Image (cartoon, rainbow, N blue to C red; front, side, top):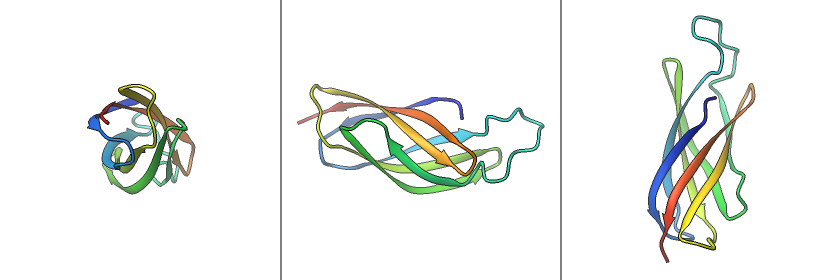
Length: 103
């Protein structure tokens, strides 16, 4: 899964926002995709100051749109850049969420 950055804009602590990221298989185009690469098991925040929750996923051709909810639990400054793990049946990829945190 190539890494992406999701720009969340302005968010407030403890107020969840719904976000979306598009993933694609890391297998070279034209080769057989492994079964389950498009099955999303979870979306996990790798930052202790944020929490994520999988909402849904939908395959569109050779890509999958993943919708998830992000909540900033606390922020020591006005900006958050949180690594997010997207777990599929065949492995784990990563994206990042960037946002301005307003009081």
